[in-house]
Length: 287
Image 1 (tube, rainbow, N blue to C red):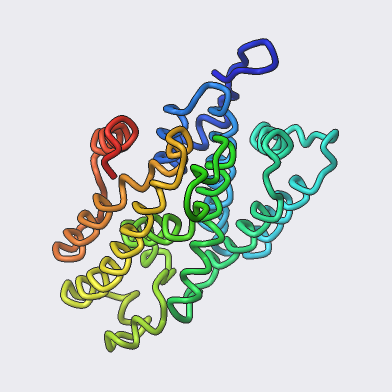
Image 2 (cartoon, rainbow, N blue to C red; image 1 turned 45 degrees about the vertical axis):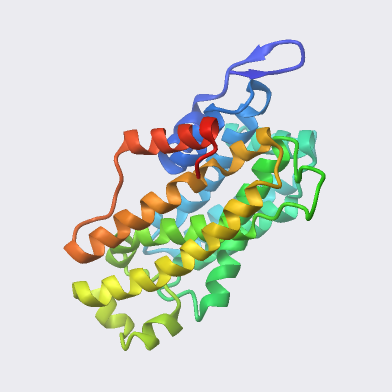
């Protein structure tokens, strides 16, 4: 439920279903937000989930993916008084108006998602970092703005860069085997070259030693970003930290990825562990 103007409105089931299935960490975080912000946070999470699904759903016709992403661009650019009839798009546009969110951030997220169609989208670490800045980092920043804070008034303003890179890379490593099975290599080409690995080798049957080395290397980079993100969280008002609660899953994702790389299994964490870690971060401040 969310507070409307003088009334309580139900959150549309489409927002809940899309956010819960595609962005479970942000969905759980939104449940812990004040009622007035809950639906808007869900709309942002559902929007992110819908964009991510496009590349997975459209594998043989890239033009179809471009058409779907273009639909979202057009929906975001509509006049405030217009409506699409799509519950997620219309709620997202309402959130943009209510909180003064920058449409450019949403459009940048769509543009970044076009990389999901490329077999080898990232030439180097800088390209990968830019992708996470435009996706996970932008989503964190939008959530913080919805919750009414970009900083606590002391020191430097909060930035979502470290948070986006830590969480984004942790998610990429967790889903690495699934991505490779789709023919998608979400790792920088320079990292593969340094490991003496060709894309074809990684896509065919990478040995545990090779995969473990790549995951360990990128895992160390993720933990450095996480250290910076934890420091950045202290700059936020307490209520606004709800937007970055998914950071509580980064270490769990990394450990699961490292175990899976050694064993050859698919990386995952238990649903209850996801809930416990997000709740612990919310109430105890343990990231």
